[in-house]
Image (cartoon, rainbow over all chains, first blue to last red; front, side):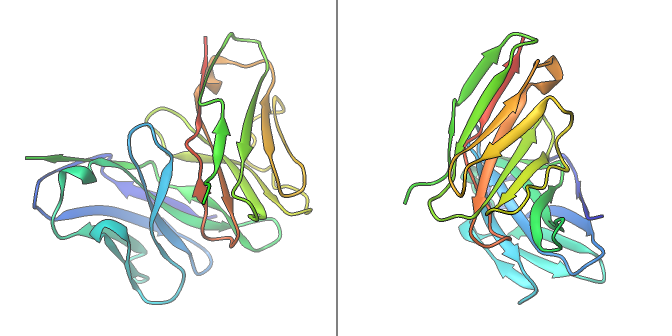
Length: 117
Length: 112
């Protein structure tokens, strides 16, 4: 079964610093991988997704993630943090459903990003 | 266009009471999902509807939980005889393609 591990439940960076949020997955089939962001009191918003095309995926708000099969990783990065990036970030892998097609998402526990001046 | 909507946004109920949570998916989205997010934790899959196929109920934690969906429209998640451990945010998502889910704002359920 698929699973996702996010290393670090809390990450704190200075404004302007590099953001690195770690995600490792396990999957018995080629995975589809996702990063979602959740701002306080809001639903989840898709940041970016990997669906077996280019291994370096660019998303919204300057974020990107690189799929590394050899490391089973899909870390999220942003070169320069902004105060508005403070939120909770979830990595997810798409699991095979009963019919064999991809459907439900398996989420990591989340990483809360704090950005300080 | 309109996104996924959920109601109510907040629900406080007494232990033992039944609750119904509603999800309105994006029009035209054939797939609908329910997830639960407990405080400080990631999302847990509950149930998945795809068109007229039998739903995937593999994530429902107990027989107190049930969900219905009529066609490709509204879904309701029902929790019977609520317990304090049911307190969580219940999130609904819909999708047209399987790997691009759009989430609603959630319903925060508090069981006292």
